[in-house]
Image (cartoon, rainbow, N blue to C red; front, side, top):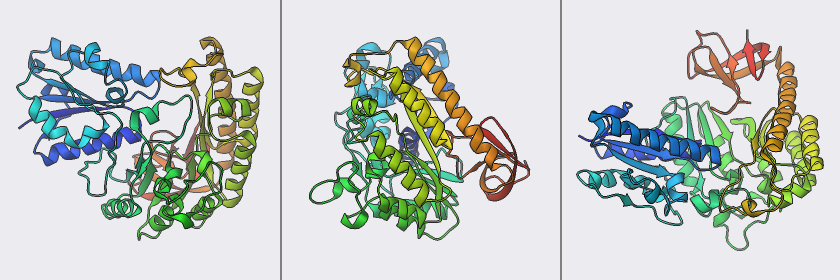
Length: 450
């Protein structure tokens, strides 16, 4: 019996790829082990979104190779590098990492079991990565969830059509391709029937769900699209909300360019949708949004935020920004800080611009010095911290419904798994259950319930 170890890096989208690989390995009769020393094969599912992620992935591969060299027990262990790093650098990695036994990309995650079987007893390196990934999961795709029993991710689409000048994702994961609404609904029903209390919808751009299948002209950014033309995130939300049960539906990775009044109305009409949206805005300056090719401008973003808050009372907005992008002036940056101060986002984060090879932004003039980028990141983060503290103060005395994550720790509707803050609760509350608690205090980004 072949024993397989897995190291999963990166975002929730990558985690689902890992879950699918584990599902197929178990279906093939292979055994998973958490102890790398006991594994006949070690899979490292990598990320390469930004420089920091690349370094973490490369470090994990080198660590595995070094451990194999130093351990008699692991001498015959096979090492497979999977995921975005393999997909992005398919040509370069085999020469840079000759100790790795195989490289697989996004289209090979369902073939991982026969790939492992073919590797056993061989010494030759294999590079199995194919260009332009086409794979998307289905409701009956073998999958072993690596999240706690009470929450799960559903990948509703793969790839991305947006032209953002700083982003390498479309070149790694290919063009946007949506699952069918029926497939997503079937998977959600299975998860809810198994006891899942929170469904997190994810893709590179969840707001583009279904639109790639519309007949005729595809919707243009900021076009005010509605769901009458076919399947969309709006129609999916309404169908998910109709599934019997007590659970949250959470929207992650929405792009501002394809938000619509119909989507706002669908969320407002669907009580099972958590009053939370993740909408990375990246900047507010027209100059920066144009250089970033974000398909939006400052006036549109400000109007959209107002429409969302007016249309969905009590909504918590999570966003992210990039500082230090090529050409960012002091005026651009100051406009961003003022925007953060004015809007008081419930949840937010800041990325220090990462210059990624093969992106348009990498070739731009006006690259910002790393010390300036760092200083701007620190200032923007301080502005966000001030805003979050004001939001948290306003929660004192309120009763919030929370989902208990582990003894003494819960999340509110305002908090997505792994990326947002927590609510400290009584350790006796049952894990995986919804509970109403009263907020008594706050500590930095976190809330404390009585």
